Image 1 (cartoon, rainbow, N blue to C red):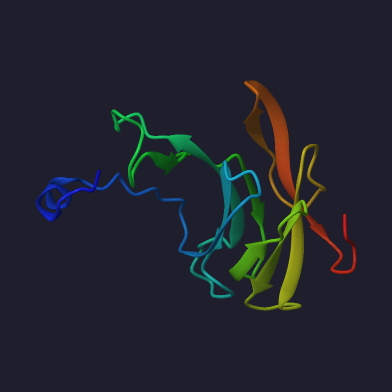
Image 2 (cartoon, rainbow, N blue to C red; image 1 turned 180 degrees about the vertical axis):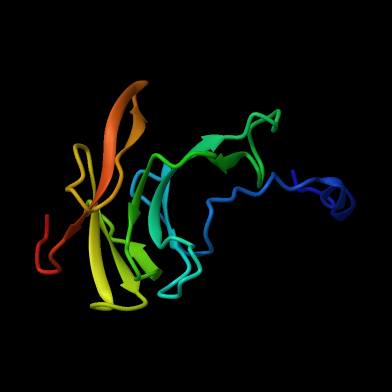
Length: 151
């Protein structure tokens, strides 16, 4: 059933999620249950960190029938984060059928490839977080990989 314009006008949007930095990049992972967000303050000395975030997509408990434009929302706490130094991720896309995404960076090499890891992220590559898979807590993180590597 379609929603009338008068009903849409009364619908309140879900509260905005804030992650502490401007966001320039967003892509769903292949599962569609998580998104990768990227952004930051760039190379300036504003104190705003440049980072990638892995955020779970969850059902919105405020939507009674579980359908419609606001049926899902982003979790308030990222499952993982990766600081990218003075380089900001500005664009990118998840590579279909592969366990990684390509990111366009505002400096450095200009192009980078990251994969999600199920184990420990390499030192200096980011902070691990706790993810959920089948109700079990799992370690998740980001790992920067060589552009020519196809794993």
